[in-house]
Image (cartoon, rainbow, N blue to C red; front, top):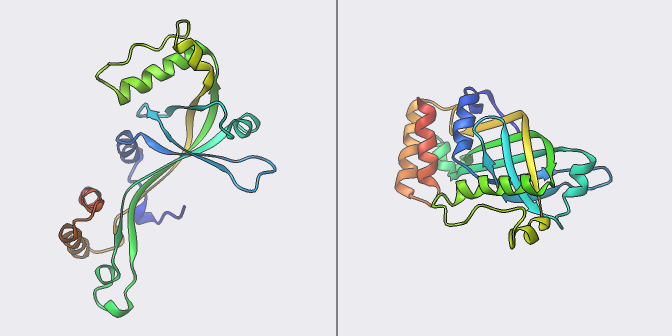
Length: 206
């Protein structure tokens, strides 16, 4: 994706902190002889540094691609909203240019596939601890039913981050007064994602 200097992450800590608050994205993998890559929406667990864990069903078409070429892209986008043309170009509303505000982090990753039952059980326990911290679900067992019967139906994935493209597109090329005015417009509109965009707009001011 295109990243202008004013939209780039200030440093690694910025994208890591943002990503730590997210657990759903798109795993993208390509392969020889394919016209288009396979894109899988998936929940994941991020360790806050360079490791991401997830699992997918065994019939998923992504496996031959990852076995052939164990590389993938994990893309996470959020805090998006539409900026109206008259907000973005108030000096000439009839010819204004609209834009989008959003945050997006794309992780370039090495892939390790996990088929060992005990390791898959451990991966699932980590996901359950994240998504169900109340602990209602018992520890996943690789040796006892029903888990022993169900575990072959999935494969685990460990992603090791080797590169990052992070973009925070929130009017970084505009003057503070313009960003403040757009913030006011977002507040007045009060759309489903406007409040989230306003948080990022304010954070990037600092």
